[in-house]
Length: 141
Image (cartoon, rainbow, N blue to C red; front, side, top):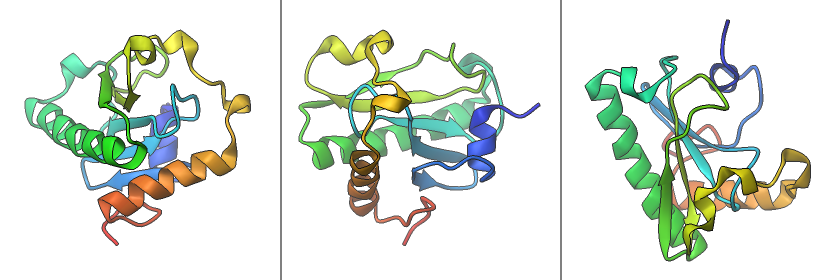
């Protein structure tokens, strides 16, 4: 059975993509620590990051670094937070988010999907896409 991330990648569930290539996608989480909170996900459905092929793990981190730089530029945060948890969806992923302190490292304090402002979510995705030079599908514009 496909994970929710695979359903987003395959277009069965909508997602706000900010990056996409043949191996890795990045899209905004629906439960962000802050607007701009992005998940970097391998296309291949692997549960634990420790089980990813080394080349896939390296590629995820390359994309995470690129997204992190875009987050700092787009949102003016002092850093881009980076977190691996993986308990909520059994599909390896990296959380990258605007961070000015350690509070973002507590995923218990996320905004729930019904608490986010859809316009602010769309604006956050648009900022990142503009910085990364990609279209709404996450591919180069």
